Length: 117
Image (cartoon, rainbow, N blue to C red; front, side, top):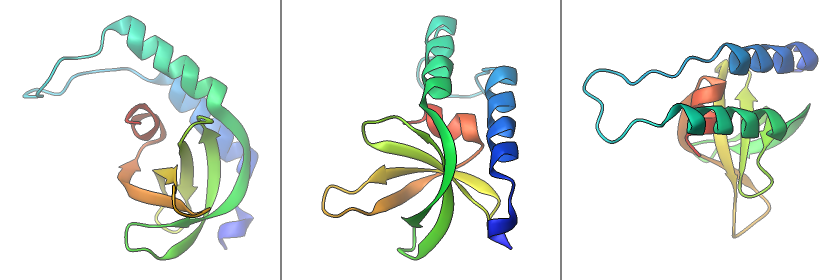
């Protein structure tokens, strides 16, 4: 079932999410909000990090191996992947101890995940 996803449509969905993203600071937030220039810069970085979607294995938060779709790669430490079973995006990092990609609890919408890196 998971392999029947339209990978190009998934990428187009992420591109639309980036284009339509509106930054807002929730009431009661702690810390300093990002200035508009930083938000725009990070959205540009996200667009530049988009890749042709491809299937990869990821170790999830419970250390189970999941087949996911890579959507973006910052070329440093992080990839944004889509986990089809849970229908969510996850930020994963390249393990320093192995060749594994490991989830570390950042999941949700594509933009929120990527910008949290």
